[in-house]
Image (tube, rainbow, N blue to C red; front, top):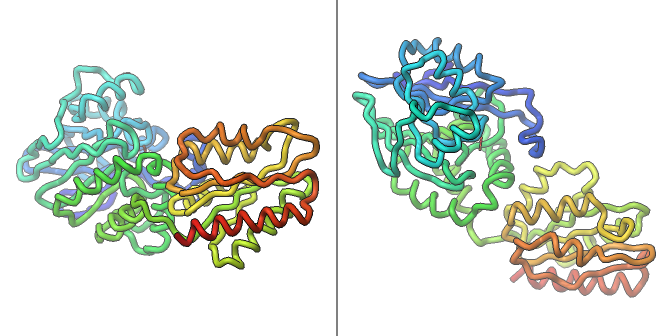
Length: 388
Ligand code: FEO
């Protein structure tokens, strides 16, 4: 438990050991589940809870903050890493009401079996008074679920933004201290769960800009006492701008595809194109996602397995399709032994992509002179588009 300001406490839990989220997202630096107590002169609110595995920590911290009664549990988001301890808090403080919006209420009933009678519903812009403190609810949908909202503490100008502006980072620092480290963790977090909703997030950024904010208190990672640091980063990530950078993600079985990749990467570098090369076998998918945030293009390189793409390349294609990066072009290269339809297969896995599809370069077995010429032509196309 840490006091952020008089009568405002951090009561969340740091999870130093967690290494995967949703059994999908690598967490190299752990995470935290941030929850907050706001004590008003008349009423007390708990803003979000923690992952069910850390319920004991939350309950202990609430008591350490000197809380006797909880009047409101503000549920900004229904995902279980923030809502999962609500049943335990209701058990400990049965008079508490769960304050949320209609969509979130239904999700909490479905996901956690919370009794319909405990809810108090709020609309976008509605306020509740804690006495000398006022909470305003700011709907920020698709950050990253449709029901997600933020809560603004008007008197102290604190925005409790839930996942929005968060980072998977376990740290003993309540506020951002090492900006480089937090920037990378926040970008990884944005890439993995926010990027598919770039459009709605842009709108939410504009909405949040209307508030005078001194502190952004997200539900993962350190708090921001320089809000501009993270709002500017989000502005850049959600913009249409791309960097001079192409991702070359590959898998190779007997070395032919790898030779193509090495030749192409060298050809791109000679043309002053920035490259991020990933061997998909063992690659940190989070790193790949980070680079997808502002890469100008993506090259997927795969050998043919049986009659199609290597499953590692198929996984990468699936991920690119799900994350919907703003890449402007996409190319498929690779080798085969006797045939197959991997190009058609991989392209069919990318229905969400609006990227221009460049001509594929395929080689039977080891690449030959004419294949290297085609890779040079591909490098020319990529350089032209990236610099534009
Ligand atoms: Fe951190 Fe969407 O939950």
